[in-house]
Amino acid sequence: MASEHDEGRNGGAAGTGTGDDGAATSTSRTSDPKTAAIAAAEAAGPQSGESVRVDSWIWAVRLIKTRSLGATACRGGHVRVNGERVKPAYSLRVGDEVRLRHEGRERVVVVKRLIRKRVGAPVAAQCYLDNSPPPPPREAVAPAGIRDRGAGRPTKRDRRELERLRGLESLNRARKDAQTRP
Image (tube, rainbow, N blue to C red):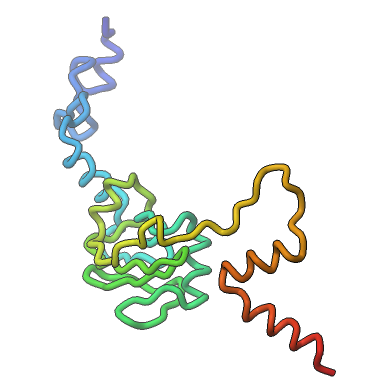
């Protein structure tokens, strides 16, 4: 039961759901997840007139795991905006094409909405248009020499076979050439 003290503080009867501005607010959550996702993306976006850094944006839309990895990728030349290499502090605009090389794959996305805060995956997917080529099938990516548990340390012969399978034979030759040169 609400007391007179509570009614005076809220500006109306307790539990009516009126806010500070006097407008009625909904006490139940919105049932439409799409509407909730759009609201979350707008809340995570910059205020009018503000810009978003490219390293922050690629982290916020979940193209990369951490913001520091995004900054490192920018510094290493793995992030291009509209075909040009960019620094981490580059300001993105809606409509920019962002190309990111990460984990052996190139992602090509077009910015649809600017956000600054990290949001859920369904919301993040609404902030860009993905034009990336499909990832290679799992069969095409060969496992990198899996050894049986308890088999011990690989011998020199085992190691050379693994390097040959991985295509690192040229590294062995270069290593040998470097050792034999005076």
